[in-house]
Length: 102
View 1 (cartoon, helix red, strand yellow):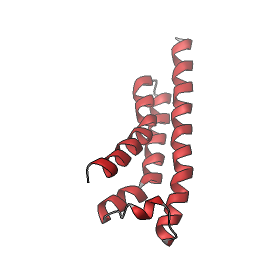
View 2 (view 1 turned 180 degrees about the horizontal axis):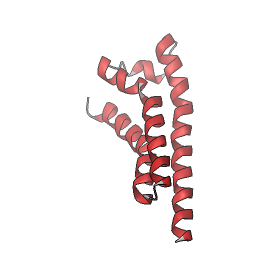
View 3 (view 1 turned 90 degrees about the vertical axis):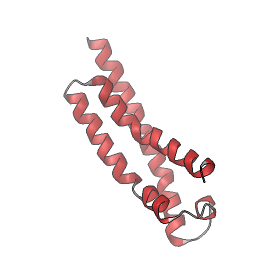
């Protein structure tokens, strides 16, 4: 139905905008982390695994965004929204894991 596809497209767009917004602030944190100029990201003192996971975020966004768009074009609506929203959910879980599971 047209209504379902339209709602899926809007949800996909908002998920991609959320991932892009996180990517903007990730860029700022990555510059601070790599230059060592301060900020909360340096206070976290990431171990090598956490640092690798942190620095892989742009690749995660690229892969899951493309996967979401491909699944949308393949008319797999629920899977496309899930794939596009994965970077946002993964960021939340990564941040909470760093704060509470250490």
